Image 1 (cartoon, rainbow, N blue to C red):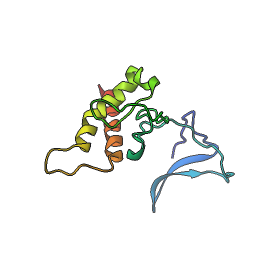
Image 2: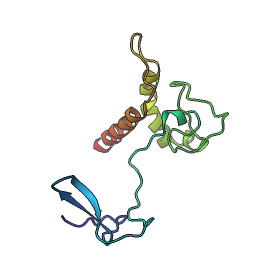
Image 3: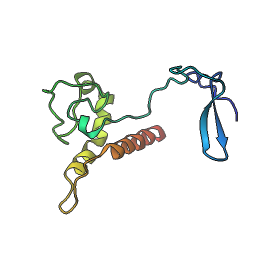
Length: 134
């Protein structure tokens, strides 16, 4: 496999290669001490657990004061002051707001989802991809 020349990856420590048994993976190229940083990267998207939606910012995941009010539309997510003032951060929540409201209070005859984490993450990734393509 060709070496990964991404600046945040340490090619002197790891490589990406295919295996017959497990498919593609990341492997150490030499013995590494526990705790050695081999990759530094920001996630493309992140969401908090549903149980943390009332205590953490839904965009940056920072802990919030208990007095932080929920979104007036979805009545679930909360934003910290910095994210509430940021158009880009507001867009992240606005994208999922209507979907989150439907997931929490679906039409009659459909049970609400208790765990929306995977669907919220999928939605964030799909909307990010859509924006990159447009």
